[in-house]
Every structure is written in C-alpha cells, then in structure tokens.
Length: 323
Image (cartoon, rainbow, N blue to C red; front, side):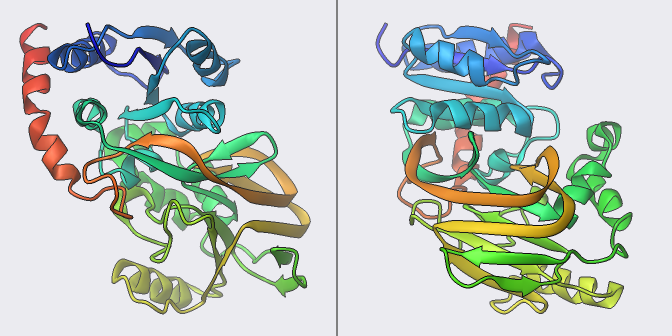
C-alpha cells in the first residue's frame, strides 16, 4: 500500500449510517491504494479535539472528520499549525465548512476531494484556544442558531434556520465597541457582528463577497438593520450578491475585538459557545492544510466541486453494492 496514513474522526450522533460511511471511506482509499484509516469516535466530553490530536500523534498524515460544526471546529483547532491535512466528510444536514467547499451533505464527495489531492493552506481565526475556519459571530447570528432545533434541521435542512431567524428579527440591537487592528474604538448599535475567513453561510449564500481564505486577513461585517424592511433590504442585497449591501459595514483586519455592555450570544463556525461580553479574534495565517476541490489554487474553495461529485459516483456505487 502507498499513500498517506489517515484517520477518521466521527460523531456518532451526527452520522446516520456508520456502516455506509465506513464502506464509502474504505472504497475511496482502496481505489487509490491508500491504507485503511483508523477510526476515532467523539464523546460528549470531547467533540473531537483530543481524538484528532491522538490520531496525529499516532502518525496520521490526513484526518477525515465527519460530524457537525462542533466536530469540524474541534478538528480544525487540533490541526492548526500542523502539516496534517483535514478532509471534511459532511454528516446530517452538513456544516459551514462543507458548504464553503461545495460538498453539500455528501460524504462520498468529501472522500473524492481528499483522494484527488487538492490541498490548500488557509487562514484560521482564533478565539482563545479555539480555532475556526469559516466565521465567528456575536448577536443575531448566534441567536438564530440558538433558536433552531436539531429536529427541524434534520427534517428540512438549512431552511430550518429561517425559522430560528424569524424569532429574533425584532429583538433590540446590541451596544458595542469594535476595535480593528488596535485602532480607535468604533461605537455601534448592530444586530450582529460577524468575523469571517470565507464567505458562505448555510444554503450557499455568500455574505462576505470579498473574503479570501489565505490572504492573512479576516473580514468583518457589522449588520445594523432596525426594522423588518431593513432586514428584507439587507437580505435581498446579499442574495443578489450586490457589491454594496445596505445597513452592513465591512472591514478587513488581522485582529478584531468586540466589547458589549452585556453578555451576548456567540458562535464559532456555526457552533454555539458560551455567551459573553467580549469576542476577541485574531488570524493565524495559512495555519490549516485543507483538502479542497481541484484546482486547489482558486480562491473559491468550492470551485468546480461538481466535478468531484461526479467522480465520486464510482465510490458511492461500490459502497452501496456492498450493503
């Protein structure tokens, strides 16, 4: 056997059919002569960071991660600063990093992307000792996640977030001070402040149109709608990919600090963290080696992911035949 040693970090709660996942991964790596990976299950006490670190210690050169946003973020945190590649295998309703890679909810496409060899070093954002690959946020975006049930996501996918968002459209704005790269504090009364490395939300909606994953900068969006009409105008401009979005200020920075007068809901890569009065984020330039669809040099991580999906049909079919 030739090829990298690999490991699979999986969340048993998010993986609906573990036997099928094992066959998909096994067929994929066997098709290119790679050795069988080791398998590591996450626990309620450890979302995957410890398991990923152990896999690396045991010699893994590539880590497949299959689970929700929390599982992926745990693996990103463990792999940041190493030369071990991360391959995302979507589970359940998918996750933010999978959406930005154009993988949807298809684990076979994730395996195909990994074995095709597309690799790209991307930046990550760091909050304390945690790292994220997509975005962090304080305010409405975290409220939306908090208001969306796992049951709804299971049945209708990313559209469930629309219901979670509707519950908080009329909430009062935050009162914050935002400091960009150590500059003068900027007082604002936004509904949400989002700090992103790549631009897509669930459903493929691109919020941060100028975001590039390896430019050494994080993109900051300050959203300040005051009414339902404002929300509609903002949302329409984002969906239409307009260069100028009403009621949204944007900046780029290596370091962003947000200070609120009261504790606010917060999220990292679509996973809720404890509410807090501050959110301090800095960039770690090119810290993560990520498996991406070819051509790996394109700034859009999802560029031509449809080609990988078509190429994965053989792996998918072989796995289903062995059921």
